[in-house]
Image (cartoon, rainbow, N blue to C red; front, side, top):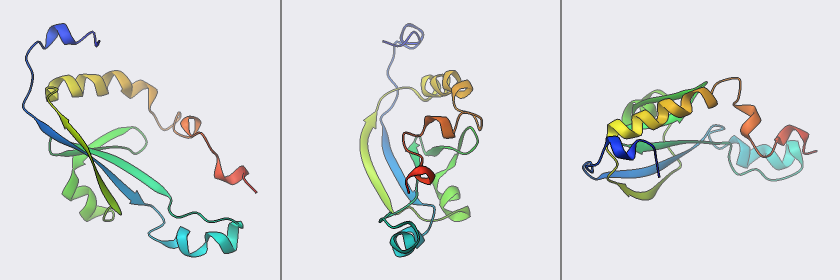
Length: 121
């Protein structure tokens, strides 16, 4: 149980939680990976969590912006996966992100990936 639970005994309003999945290669991985790498890669994923009307994502650190703004300035998602709903107050969610922020920086980004595709050949 979170140490913040005592500070926020009331539940917030329901918010839908959706995982936005993007293909950073915009289809090129699926088309060309077999030829260049010798194995099939369907996409180069980037994900964001859409909750409270904002998209939260990693981009050199934890960032957020309205989902529509992210799509307009980057690319459309290849999939929007409904994850459920939350009653967690937005303020508590933002406190949680602040606690995580030091662990998720540009310096720690590559170290959290379980597979380094460049070493696969």
